[in-house]
Amino acid sequence: FSFVFGLSPLAYGLATLFAIYFCLQLHWQDHIVLTAITAVTVIFSSHEMPLLFSAQQILTALLGAVCGLTVNYLFTPNHKKQVREQLKEVEAGSRRIIEFIMLEMLEPGCNDESFKKEVAQLKDTIEEGMDLAKLLQEEQRFVIHRETDSDRYRRTFEIFKSQLARLEEMHNLARRIPIKVPHAGPIVQLFRIVQKMQLRRATGKHHHYRIIKRLMAKLEQSFEQLEMPHNRDEFISRASLFHLFQEVKRYYRRMQEIPFAVLKED
Image (cartoon, rainbow, N blue to C red; front, top):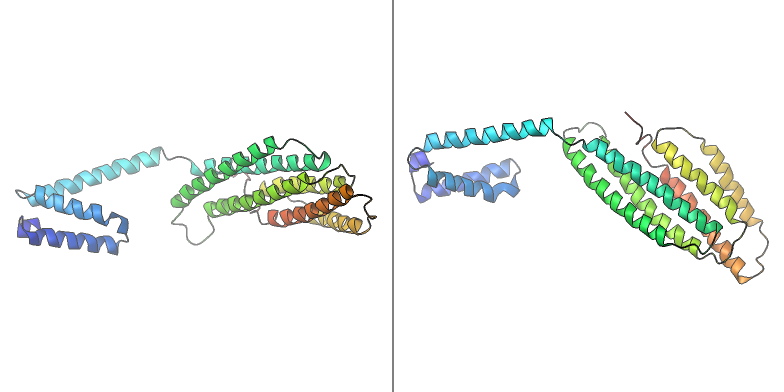
């Protein structure tokens, strides 16, 4: 346009309109302003030899693109490894939080400051992991015919995020238990099995679902056969334990949605 129309309003107007048009066709809406300003600047700067100046600008941009792609290829961060490390930490952190809950069930009245600190740290780790998974998704955006690693990792982080909220509720229930009661032992045993099954599923190790289903059915029956509580504290403890038992079952069902072998080494 500069070569044909020179430094005229028509050249500036046509360059701006075509810059907007090409950006819209390429779905680069975020770059319209920068592209239009660049086009106008090129016209203003190239009034003496517009074709030569334009060729120099194109070659300079291509040289920068080649250098950038080369650096990215040689020094690309291993986002997949970073996401896996974050996911391992999230899985291990959730099991540590389960330990706090089981201890609270067996020994009511424990200090919960360490629990709160662990929960806050785990929330930050989950958010960091989800951000890294987004970067990995950018690298795998051209894979459209199958589920990518980034899809599986992001879904796993979402599951652990919802599980963390459930664990916080379970800890609140455990804190309501006023006295130590023997009925907590079997529920802790069940929770410990679920805790181990979570790690086995994430690392690609098979386990027997029938065993835990039988244990859950046995616990359901034992609650039905309990004698009437003798005092208020015993009633509150039993009610909290029953709710904890239901939450453990929900945690277990949600845990089964974790992609199998998501942490298994390639």
